[in-house]
Length: 140
Image (cartoon, rainbow, N blue to C red; front, side, top):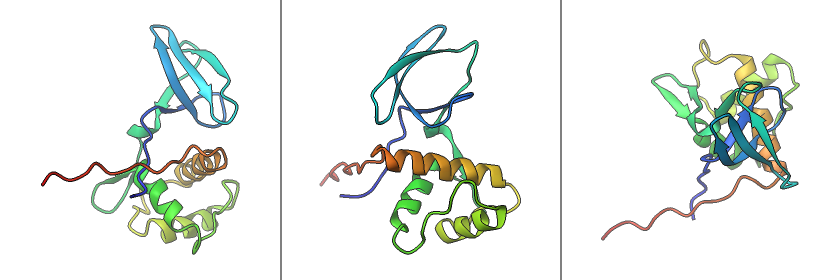
C-alpha cells in the first residue's frame, strides 16, 4: 500500500479555521462537514470563498508540487523531522520546509503559504483525515 492522499473533497473556507469535507453543493453555497465531529452546516458563497485543497500546489524549482504530495512528504518524514508549529517564526518554517521539500522555490513560496500548509496538515492529522489510498493494480 502506498501513502497517497486524496484531497478531492477537502475545502478551506475563508473566515473559518480548519479544513472541511464538502458533502453537497447548492447554487448559493456548499454543505460542509467538520472533520472529527461530523457536524454539517451550510456555508453561503456570498459570505465565504472556497478553496479546494486538491487544486493547491507549492512552487518548486521547475514547476509546482501538488499539496497532496507535500502532505505525503511531511507524513513520511514525521519520524525524522518533527513538525513545527504553524505559529513558529519564519526561519523555523523555512528550515522545516527545506527538510520536507528541499526543492521548494525560496523566492515564490511565502512564509504564509508554509504556515497554511503546516496548519492544514496538523489539523487533518489530528482528526485522522489523512488516509492511505491503495494504488490501482497495474495492468498486465
